[in-house]
Image 1 (cartoon, rainbow, N blue to C red):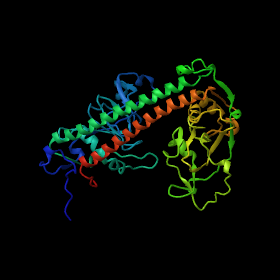
Image 2 (cartoon, rainbow, N blue to C red):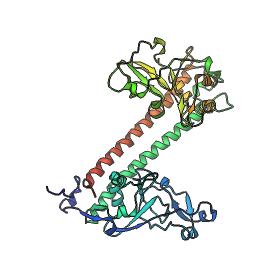
Image 3 (tube, helix red, strand yellow):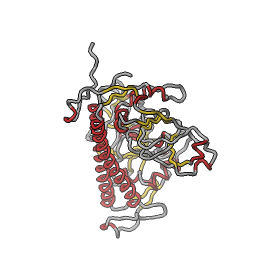
Image 4 (tube, one colour):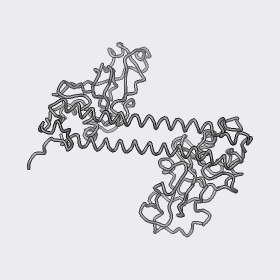
Length: 435
């Protein structure tokens, strides 16, 4: 059986006649350095100008950024296992986050969670970094140990790295992927700015604690006076929900779709449009006749997740804004509330219950230790607020939903760029061969 040739599927035209890549053990291409942690109780060790990083300071899928927040001094290095890592080294996280890596742009020290590689002139640091970034499974396959898994310097030393002998080809590959990373970073920054803008709008479009009107009001409603403040149970009443677990649901077939609380936490938009969301069906073999007609979701209903391990997510909610003429029920660990009479415009409630003032009330009503819970009775205690003019409510909802659409489009663009990068990396490096 012929040996697989070390040639990538994608190759820049100027290097197509360069022949096969080499394959050499890493220990022949540079040296390895370990790390350590100075005694944390000795405050004097943590006052200095030498950056020190742990595995939590390395971001997944971004070899350019290292978050430096801690600094040590020469005394710290002398009295611990940490050491100076030269600029331009490849910092491999060798335990507690195996697979993450980064290139340092300045001298620094690392914790014992790292095995750092200092390349020689035969290989370029970013070429090595991108190769392992595209083959994280190779690093993760080295995982050993029980309570804390990881790999050692010896594991990496014997690893055979495929690379082109021409460093210009290495540079072209690294530059191509770095340029794409810059584009992704720019789009990610834009996404962060959009989210910050929305956060600011939410704070200003709804009254803050102790205020009866929002700080920002659309011009045509400035003379409309104070908002109405009412207890939740004067506006909404709760209906019966079901308790179908994931085992009772499927994504292929059924007559009734079901909202699971986990999807409220992780996937569903604030304004729930059934045409835009992936929602499971109740399995066909489960009897649905016992579900009363009034307990099917209606547009304008609020659905709350009643349990969470995180205080920030307890009581997280969505508003049903489009059912697409389909049958939908509110399921396991959810609470469904419907307006007693129409006081809130469709779309307004979704954002109202995401406002800081409402969220803080819900968090105060939550109960529990490891798992926090909220009941319909306790949600009924909170105070809600709204402008009397439904046109103002609608304008607030439209403003925020338009911004959400921009955020969603931006996130999807980033996802597509990352997918493109993944495909490029798979093509620019030869298929990995077991070492």
